[in-house]
Length: 72
Image (tube, rainbow, N blue to C red; front, top):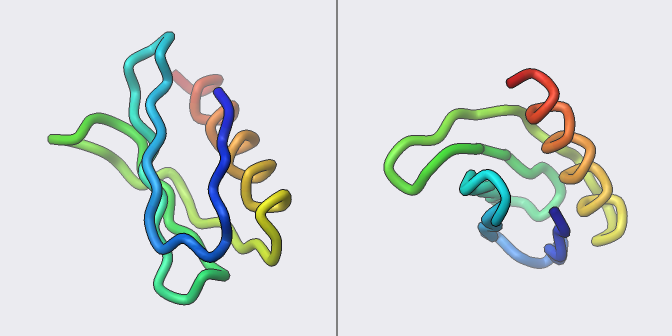
């Protein structure tokens, strides 16, 4: 799954076409990003990411999502 979020975004969502899972990311300060995975109706928190660039944020999102997929 490819993530393309900017650290200037306060909210983004991504859908994994293979699994149908959605990844929701939000931030109030554009430095710490809360990540939830699930569906629009039901999602669970899977962690928080601190990032200072879009590249760092998207890389950490991909790592966190891969970890989540490995636990399922």
